[in-house]
Image 1 (cartoon, rainbow, N blue to C red):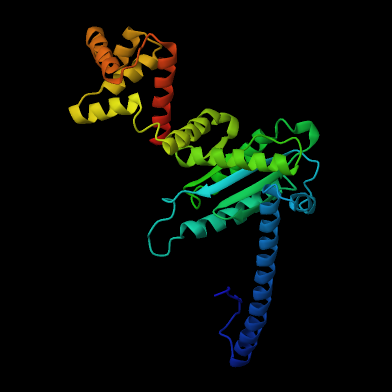
Image 2 (cartoon, one colour):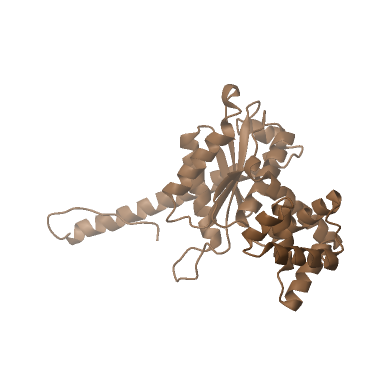
Length: 308
């Protein structure tokens, strides 16, 4: 089904008029098919150019030129749909359909709000490259963030679960700059997908979160989080029904202020001190050693980042 033709007439159609309408529908259908093929070809060409421009390969400079982005400050955005966005309700769009719809709508929105913007679906992510001018290069990420929020607000009913990450602005759309910008946008997007509730963010706003996620990846790959002192304390809590990890966390977050930490947990200070000593005994952490305290804080933060 491509569409329909409507006519307003004072009385029911006679057979001759009905045949004319049917013949006209056939002509319009062919026109729509040709138009759809052309649009699909244009979309694929644009997607190929954007993917090439962001990949920092030997063909990247030519792709950047064809996109008319050379020697201009740019910002890259990455948009994706969470797995829970599409429902199993009959007739509801799948995640892929929702992402395709998002890519088309975002491409149109950005091209109107910020002329020269290009966007396309590359794999499971919709990337947009938004150009600016030299005078407003520093304000470009903020401008793009405002446009993204406006886009998601306008399409909030139809694009539930869509999140959008924005990189730091690149001084010029060189291959290396675009590749770095894409990486920053991807890292920001990852944080948003693991932090329910927030839909748009710039890399500078979630830089610590991205660092913690990457440190967590590194430690997981090396097994460093599997037998660390904080993991030992967590295992002890699970096996004994205690909450010593909460005690240690509150103490570290309060910079060693027992009164403040015990108040945050609604525990008597003496009870809190006892639990803190037990936590130190179980983990072997010397709480007077600043290096050990820092390592414990880092491990706790990484675990928080791994547990959205």
